[in-house]
Image 1: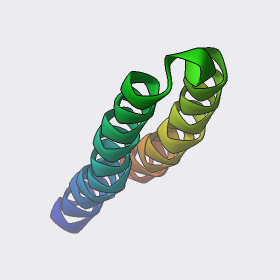
Image 2: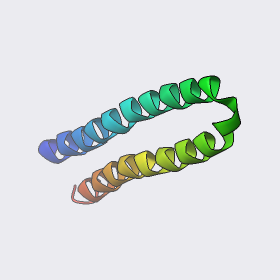
Image 3: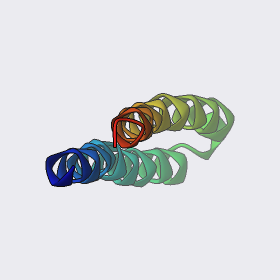
Image 4: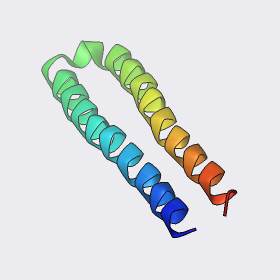
Length: 73
């Protein structure tokens, strides 16, 4: 039982690190692009929100794996 709990914790922890870092970098670059070219802010914002959605889906997969592991306990 203990190993399943550790596996679930690792699933959540490791799958949130990557998207968290990715979202920080994407937000920084998106805001930098909007500051440099304000006329392209709409397109940049749309693409940035879309990329955030894809990154969040990775975290949700980790949450799903953790839930599946917890049902084994």
